[in-house]
Amino acid sequence: MTTSTVRVRVPATSANLGPGFDALGLALDLHDEIEVTLDEPGGGSGTGPHAGVRISIEGEGAGELDEGEDHLIIKAMRKTFDRMGVDQPRNIRLHCVNRIPHARGLGSSSAAICAGILAARALAAPYAARAGPEGGHGGATGDDDATGGNRRAPGAELLSDDEVFALATELEGHPDNVAPCLAGGLTIAWLDQSGRPSMVKLNPHEGIRPVVCVPRQRLSTERARGLLPRDVPHADAAANAGRAALLIAALTRRPDSRLLLAATEDRLHQDYRAPAMPQTAHLVKTLRAKGVPAVVSGAGPTVLAFTTPDTQDLIAPEVGNDWLIQPLSVDPVGSFVQFPETR
Ligand SMILES: Nc1ncnc2c1ncn2[C@@H]1O[C@H](COP(=O)(O)OP(=O)(O)O)[C@@H](O)[C@H]1O
Ligand SMILES: N[C@@H](CCOP(=O)(O)O)C(=O)O
Image 1 (cartoon, rainbow, N blue to C red):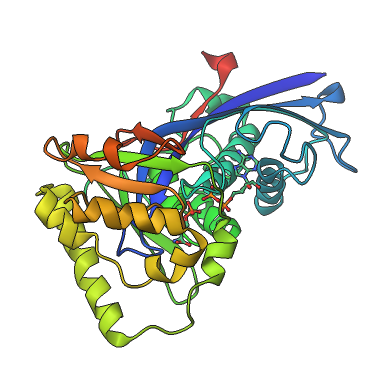
Image 2 (cartoon, helix red, strand yellow):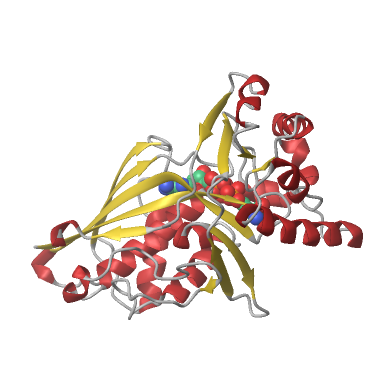
């Protein structure tokens, strides 16, 4: 029996950031960790029917999530082995430590998908490649740096970083969580005419202090996307384009509350989704009236606020017991892959 193990750490992400629907995203210092072990009888690569998947889960989703082939990480791994053209492993052991809340607008599904893809890619890498540079994604590495700066993560010869990004976007359905999850920091993601994603990574100003207010209530992204209209007024689209551009300036150069308040205005998604999360809509409105730049995180129902020293203390009095207030720093690194046996 040969055994190989990989560990992957993936961050929570907040997408949209107000006006940047399906484009902007921020990686947060809150992580899921997985450990995946492949046991191959006789050391073969293993073909034929999947002999077994064994899953253990700590934290969010324990006792709730599927513990077989329908687990999202296993599905992402299977898809990745197929995409790389390598045999499916026979025995997969997956241990998950889940800290990102599910269906709250903090990118848990994107994190699970990225973790599965990166684990599968790393496990398919030749053994000799495993002592190479750490880090799950060699994509964007600094300000104004588009994807493609491959620093040859293990398995990159089988599936490049750009292909990892494309596959994760295909599975997730939109690129704005996947980009910061892979690359860290603040990302702008977009799709070309054929649906292929690209990103630019930026480093937010160190004065930016994200705080998330997470409610008990869940709302699936699929349901929240179903509430959006097919068409929007031209004036609303124009307003969002200007605000999204301003937001990049505010988050990277001038993180003062007045500018951030204007820069986080949205007309494309938050109001349409409000009926599915009235408490979220109310909290966003109340915080903004007090001068705190607050938005719906991703598809909701979490609220994201960009605080500065003058607004930090304004949040707690407005938030009832049903919410968890979490100040989080920005994760500048993104996904991270490690082989315990090469340590
Ligand atoms: N770590 C995980 N392991 C397995 N499935 C997960 C994991 N994280 C998320 N999921 C799946 O994704 C769903 C949440 O996805 P989604 O509605 O897009 O919300 P969000 O990504 O904003 O948390 C969960 O209900 C679960 O089915
Ligand atoms: N742009 C997407 C973002 C969804 O983020 P999630 O964290 O809620 O999955 C959308 O608004 O639908």
